[in-house]
Amino acid sequence: MEDRRSQYEEDGGQEVTERESLNSSIVDAINQASDYWGIKCLRYEIKDIHVPPKVREAMQMQVEAERRKRAMVLESEGTRESAINVAEGEKQAQILASEAERAEQINQAAGEANAILAKAKARGEAIRLVADALTQQVTGLHLTSESSAVIFQILNAEKPLHMNVQSYMMQ
Image (cartoon, rainbow, N blue to C red; front, side, top):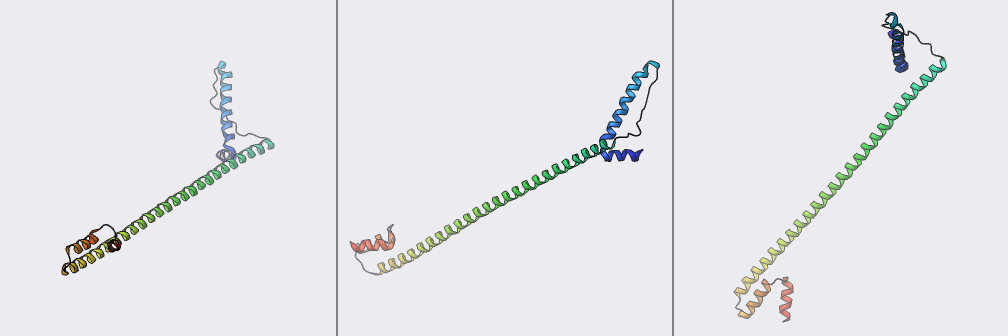
């Protein structure tokens, strides 16, 4: 009996469920009809159903169609999940590439700023050294106060040194 039941479940559990439903319906019908005589049917079992071959083929085709349908649905869900994973991976790669490019630009800008500061400090130091040397030379010379004032104006002016010298030479 167990072998047949497992075979029916393999062929389509629907047949077993229908058999149990049919058994229950028959027990109910027998009990309604025999209640008048005080007879109660406890169990009724259909042991074997002889289904015509064409009906059996149709049932098997239906079960196979359901299996194929489930397989196609699972395959399409797998394809969908795969496409989503690929898209998310590409998106993450673009985000990381963008962040890397941004960090590179920040580092490059910081390097350029440091180079500009270093050049400015070096120029400032060079100007200070030239100013100190000129100051020593001017103090060593006996210049008129007018000449000293012009030299100090050149050294303390806001324009670049060469522009100050040219403008004072033209006067």
